[in-house]
Image 1 (tube, rainbow, N blue to C red):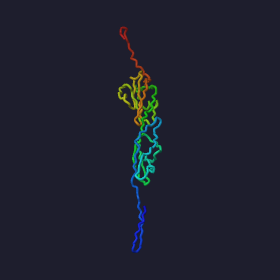
Image 2: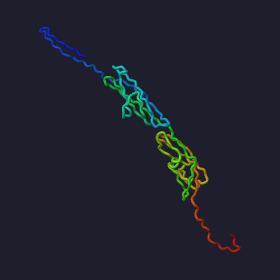
Image 3: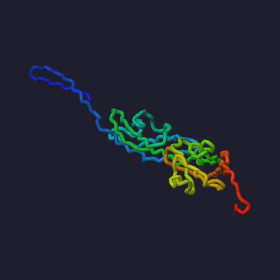
Image 4: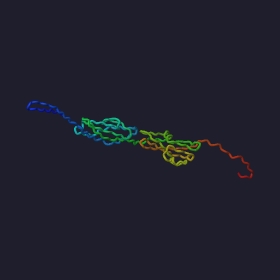
Length: 238
């Protein structure tokens, strides 16, 4: 606003004018309301989720809502705008919504987007496995060995693979708990044994499958040791 002030001396008819400028400034921030926190769930064939950023609600004391501009800061790493689609990995993501009025004032709010992986690993155990004892009468089977002969996949990643026996044998009760390896021994020959394979993905989802184990002893027999020669009388018992 510009005003011109004029002073007149009525005695001398002298005049003097000065210009006054009045600046009306809007320093009031708009008020923004964020969308609600959102949960997204991964699909079976993907480890990412697409998210279309919604437009927040905002008001301003001087400017109509239609004149406000918006920006969204995603995980403090890059800027997007409402209406655009972004790709998110599993985990919790922070979206900072920012509203600007025509005078440059701004307001910020934050919302969370949780990308959840609820998909269990896919397991296919081999139908059966024949293992042979070593010369000491024992064989150690590892979880990685079993997994390599079956199918263990996940839409994201596998964190751990473990195995366990269904029954206690070979003096190793610990083998009935999930672990990296289990043992089989001579006591297992001629029995059909069940082995459980467990896979855990990076989000803690688990899946299980079972397979049969057949234990064989293919080690060659040792040279028999015959007793020494013996001389008997006709009346001796033998």
